Image 1 (cartoon, helix red, strand yellow):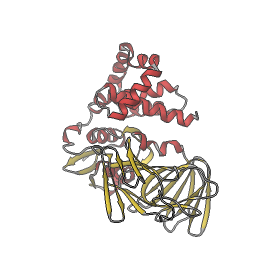
Image 2 (cartoon, helix red, strand yellow):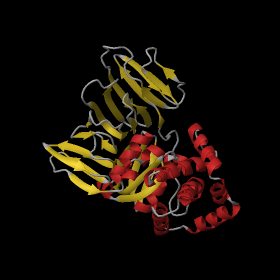
Image 3 (cartoon, one colour):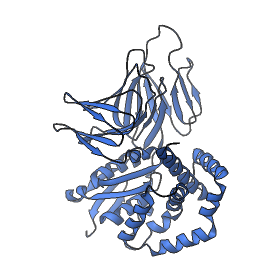
Image 4 (cartoon, one colour):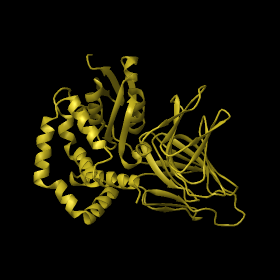
Length: 381
């Protein structure tokens, strides 16, 4: 197993186990937690032992400053940690969250969150004038012509069932406050983030596989050396044969980001082609040259495992992501606040009040929630 796969597996298991132990898990998280416990009994016992929790509680009481929190968060993100400690760290974030959010210094926001909930699995599929809604309460669905199967929270496209059939043009739309996973007819797996749209055929019948993206998606492309896989966004064209990459291309944001996790990608913009290698990120901004930078690519796709991961992210970009996920609007009392930066890892399914409180601890801003509007102010206001 690759190191990145092991990291992702440990992160998912740790968060599932943590939420399971505090009674906040969803059905699939309970399955992951039980699976982890059955294969890692010794590590699980060590993580939840009374001695370990006692030490953690004592440590937590001592974290009173922003710098102490930053130091712990940097240690937790270190890639040299043992896998079981990565899991334990995730577990501690879930179990220890309440104590950290309510630390003295700023008023906790959880009581103000009202009806604002974290996003969940939901989407709408549009096909030839028909619509199919998918959500937590939808049972397994098999379309009468057997071309679509919705099972275990994943929509699978089965391809044409009759010779001579032409592909349907499909639109898969994930609203604000949603996320969704689908497997295309060729086996390519796509995770769509909140407020995203994917246009694609029900099956690929030509010499190439082509889709259109608006929003953010993580692609795990099925390898096919004879048919390139092409992703079109508002500003660029991305071509691959079989690889993993994340694309963030919201029309209301100035930049598009394509981040390569594995394989190779050719990105075409303004008549030029840029070749990406693993851990390359291409930043496309209208009217400017494409910027290629080196990043930790595995973190770009962690949103699909239930985590927010921010590395020197501007507050404007961070709040844009929270706004889409929690389906809220954001108002700044001072435009200067948008340029502040934040780094950290946060639970994507946590109460928005607690998320905002933790961001405020390290950016010296305060948040108030009025209905579905988040008001951002400087710490001194």
